[in-house]
Image (cartoon, rainbow, N blue to C red):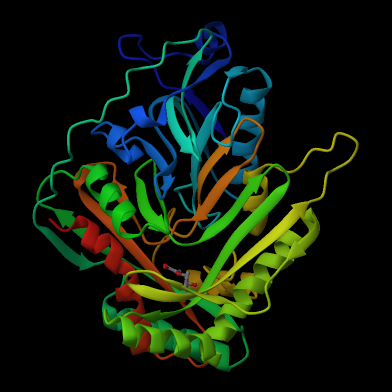
Length: 442
Ligand SMILES: C=C(O[C@H]1C=CC=C(C(=O)O)[C@@H]1O)C(=O)O
């Protein structure tokens, strides 16, 4: 089921679908701004309520205000959202003097990992988007029926600290989760599947109501090579790009295979070499690359898949990583490519978050994890009017409780293969929880 809701401007009152029709199509206007007039960190423009974000190394898009919201669910959550976006863009009136990816109208989205999750999917069309890319910077304003004036762009007040943070077990205790890993290893050794990614959650309670900007700013500073995101209460900094689709070229960063960092550079270099030669991690990685390339292949006229992974250095962990690229095949006479969201739907879930074979892995996840992953490990990102966009896999993330600003749920998962050891996987999951835990720190 798809629900498209308009979010009323202050003082306007709720808009019925009829009023929305009367209010007219989406009207968007993008004007260039002098990059020197923007803060180096775009997140500093976000209002206290948090807004929307997709940023990396000072570039990307941040947005606020909610003009429209598309809510979907079930197995068609991606397709229904894509249809709604296409329908909105078919009648949109767009003036864009910048013309780079991210300028013009954009929607931010986040989708549940599992088709059966009550979290479904959401696309949020903001009222104001500010972006920076290369030497260009811009502001886009969106409205219904009429164009609105761009707002003054000033850094907002510094976010307040969340105070003391306490943690509780989520669905499973550390012991319980290791039992789940044991069951998974048994199933793999018995030949039921090759790999499964098992996740756990942790419940956090903050002393003060959480200002999402506190977490976002710290994640973006500390994890500069990750994509820092905020969409509809889901916050995080993911190192894994499901795909970027831009003018017919698709790029994906596949990760799987992890080793914890020690904090000592020399020791970490030695660990990077161990990781690059670890047969257990290389096997885990190979499944993830294979699942991505198999799903991407039919959409591409050519793909480039490096033979060996490189080691991605993050402050908390080292990962095996492969950057895959592909040239999209133009479909039929109209030469239209699938949208980035359509591609995300086809690629999700890769073996970096589900396993191999996918169906058996998802079934085992449902049996042993004991929780709904909600939007953790699902696609999160943004899409423009032409369908191009960027979708990450929502890892190293937390979901805010919409009913209580003191509560959030943190997630981390680990790829399990025949050679996995439950205690080592638990330690790895702790390392993956570290970015969010330290971002919550005062
Ligand atoms: C599922 C997660 O990580 C994936 C991405 C990179 C490395 C992974 C691993 O080594 O297990 C996981 O496949 C997570 O961070 O929650």
